[in-house]
Image (cartoon, rainbow, N blue to C red; front, side):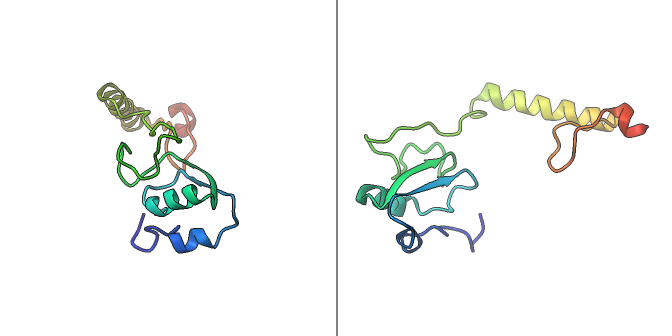
Length: 119
């Protein structure tokens, strides 16, 4: 999220959408004005929303939530055990690259074995 994209889906922009629109945000918290989204959901202008990112996480005090809505924050790596496992996996991948030249799970680069990379 940048200063230019913060609340890019504002109350004004939400009002420009067709009634019943469904809004999905799995990019960055803060791109959608969450209070404006709640108002648009309550009014019926927005037919539904699916988010896995929020301005504040966990989203326990988020205006998006209500007794009529349920959901689960993106919690795949939010436990101490999960954070430790992710850290160990990244350390192993870096070690594989530095020691053997193998690349795995890199962003914007295919996974390749050390043998293929050297050959």
